[in-house]
Image 1: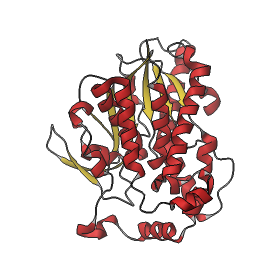
Image 2: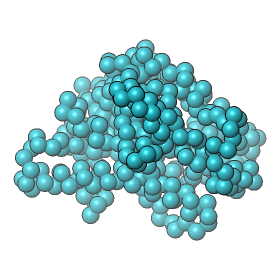
Image 3: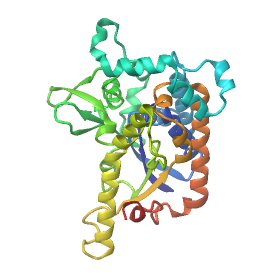
Image 4: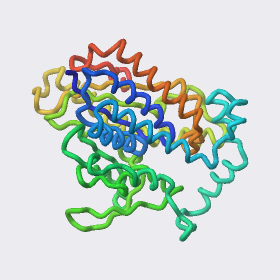
Amino acid sequence: MIRINLALQGGGAHGAFTWGVLDRLLQEDDIEIAAISGTSAGALNGAALKAGWLLGGRDGARENLDWLWTQVARLDDMAVPLWMQAWLPTPAAISKSIEYSPLFQLSDTVSRMMSPYAWGPLYENPLEKIVDQFDFGRVCANEGPQLFVCATQVRDGKVRIFEGDAITTQSILASACLPTLFQAVKVTDPETGIVEAFWDGGYTGNPALFPLFHAELPDDVVIVNINPLVRDTIPVMPNEIQNRINEISFNSSLLRELRAIEFVQRLISAGKMQEGVMKNVLVHMIADDALMNDLSVATKLVPVPSVIATLKEAGRRATGEFLAHHKADLGKRQTADLVRMFG
């Protein structure tokens, strides 16, 4: 049995790519998912997978992920109409049509000028009615993959990792709380009774890798990237600039942890650190940067069913290619070129 850890990035509706990755991985009977660290959409995917896994094994996990993304696809009040989706068949065209639509531009402007607290009693978080339906008895269980949910503490700006019984509707909503759109999510610490406010985990860990460094967990960490690390074109339009700022800020914490891993690997390789003092993590990545470069923050915020379906299939395809080329490497060697990334 090949044991791996998963690190699932956040990125709104683009998390459907991760759905496809998980759907394909769950078809590999000889791969065991030992632990999952997830942020935002990654946290939702991880919770759905674990709850489904404990209910019905691999098939149960796949069915629960299908249910989750069916629910997300229904949160489409601002989405492109079905007739227009047929007229604009490519995800890139749909993304542009949303970005430049008057309704989206108006909502984007309002989000920069108006606080989410201004809505008063009319305020609601659309994800809450989905997350409330999770079976937290299974999400928080000791059995199955260990689950870690990342959020950012507003008061001190530090990363907070929720695990075990601390994973609740509120902690998952906290992990996905964009502060320009949602009110900070308040979570009570079960040990201290102190109430803290949280924002999206992407600011401090997208996803956090360090929870996966425990000695009892496998060395392999498979990162599912949904925020492109590289865009070759320079953004010039206001929406393009904002989109790239979003991607850079939400990748920065991951890149810092990867740089630290690469530094430890160099010390171990050079004999300057005894093996076993720090974990020699084997990093792998599954991504489709070409597709993600065609999309933008518009398709992260507006769940368009046709784009979600495309992202799922892209995730399955990317995972199939990864397994064809690197399944034999799992447990033996790293496939992500961190030296080149930080050289």
